[in-house]
Length: 448
Image (cartoon, rainbow, N blue to C red; front, side, top):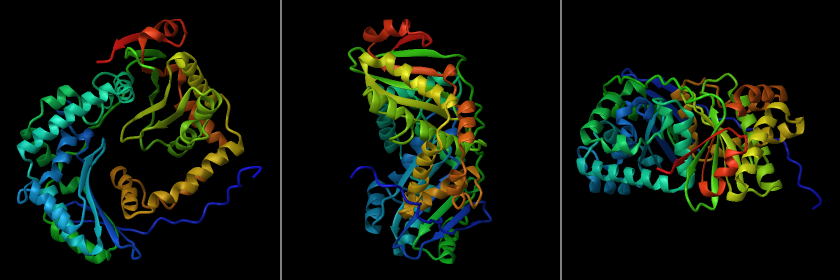
């Protein structure tokens, strides 16, 4: 073969049609019938993510979500596990910044029983003190273990330093050791009582269903659920400082430096959302991106370099990442910053843009191969109020992004002169070179 095969036009794809309604108690219901499938996936979302918790109780949202799968008022942990095994379903529950989700996937014939169990665990969770203490201890241990891992430590410290003090996004959504350590079962019970409510919740069911029967089941098990819920906080992100600065988190003996370079990014409603997604993919979101091609393929500094926006209800971070050999740390930072500047001043060629755009369009249907993937696709529509035709027009919106729009997004949204450069590494090996590099004011801190 003398060259790689030419890409063909993406196959046609249309996101499945769905129905949605709202019950009298405020619960949103989204139904996606897929007659050819044997499975059905049910996701129950409620406005009980980390953005809904008060900072002194940071981490309570994640713990309450985990507690939901440890039993109900009627079923202790063992009986709950036995019930899920008998039904042949695996129930899950987790939280993110903008929502909490409980759900399961089951054969269509088990949908009714599974929905009854899901309703019971959300409405009447056991919230056992012993289970809470176990999960709390696991969470504290996980946070401490994360700080022993250079990559996870860099992620945590980057957030802390890129956002101003007091901004919730300046921490991981699971909380801090100090906040989690102060939590108790009463806090969990109060959070559940106030945040899990139909008026701020949605049920999504995709798969082997008849919409009328599925709606009747939801109504039977959740129609008499009561509660309004206070909703999420309004988070107003601000940056910790202005101008470029360098923070080195000292990990003596490290043979690599974990790099995190970035600043505040965009929220989910940003008008340049699609242009930003294409631009970020071109810069560092696919294997052939500019960052990966330069730092990995041409220079051999890293196994992979990437960047991404993390849009949330409020402004999430923009971060470029790489793990590089200690001896090339400063050069790698210069090269990374050079690519951030280049995307602002050197627009992509039509062929470069087309390659990335076609990739994003081409892999688009892959996320919908399972009923879980299809149900998950409706989550941002329910959480952020996206239009009903969002997925129908998704490919068109990507295909419509032009070179000029990528350039405009890069100019507005990528700001290397304002970037925080945070790295974990061996200060004894790289401090002096960093101090004289001219990359920005340097601060060296311990890995605590």
